[in-house]
Image (tube, rainbow, N blue to C red; front, top):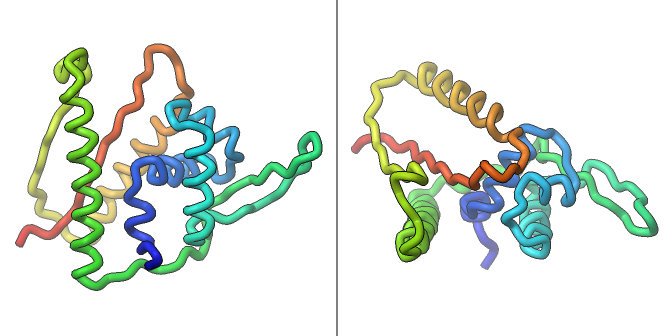
Length: 170
């Protein structure tokens, strides 16, 4: 069975790759690896393959580098569309939430972690927004993301995962 586009994107590493690509426009695997030093090189290549196979990334350019071909990736300007049936969305949401739960469990099982020091939080807010206001809100969040996505690795920086879920209140 072919995975859905949403389930491909919902992987935390692939989501980070897409976010990097949204900021950088183009990048090589080496450049992405420098932005995500916590991701093993072999894993990064597997995720890039999944994203290109799903036509979410394209190879924008190929450069000859010391006898090999270096691929330059870009977001596909015409990506395939997502499935919109409720059963698929429910399955993908479950997958996403299970990944979050797994990450939290892993973090909490390590006694050396300190939730207060690490600024771990769980927050939820109910907003009243028109579609236009919500679109503006999302664009502002995107600008904030873009600003910090350009941060280079350094000793004082930690990898932090922030997940947003938008759903109508039923």
